[in-house]
Amino acid sequence: MVPRKLQLQSLYLEPKKADLLDSLSGETRIPKAVLLREAVDDLLIKHKKVKKAKYNPRTGS
Figure 1 (spheres, rainbow, N blue to C red):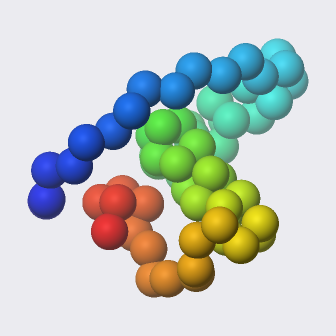
Figure 2: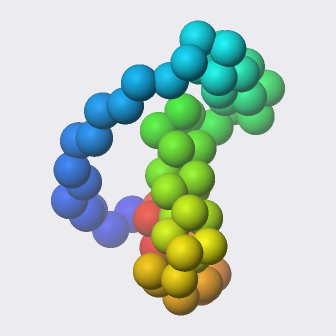
């Protein structure tokens, strides 16, 4: 895996959403951080800040 630099970002979630994220992470066995990075990628694509590309959220490439 290629090393990459990441910047820490903190956020507040409503308790129900935090519980749902915990549940999704447990069911899929995908870490919450990976799920959140994927969500940010989807948001940036939606708002045309980045082009859609084949992306592996586990590796970041």
